[in-house]
Image (cartoon, rainbow, N blue to C red; front, side, top):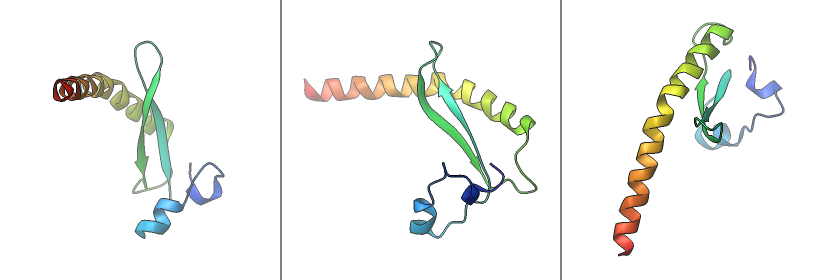
Length: 86
């Protein structure tokens, strides 16, 4: 979004609490190979101008590459919790 505060989906609470000023936002879902959304990737405040389709394609590529690492990390965390319970 070119102006975060002009978009009704934007929640300014974090900005208010931290003093940060969000100007522009680009978000894409983190999807598993089954299509399940397990999170989001976001970019804030592009240095020059609004985010473009090219920026979105790049962030989607980064998101796609990050899902296996995130899933692996979640698996390790579940295993550690299970071991701690034993």
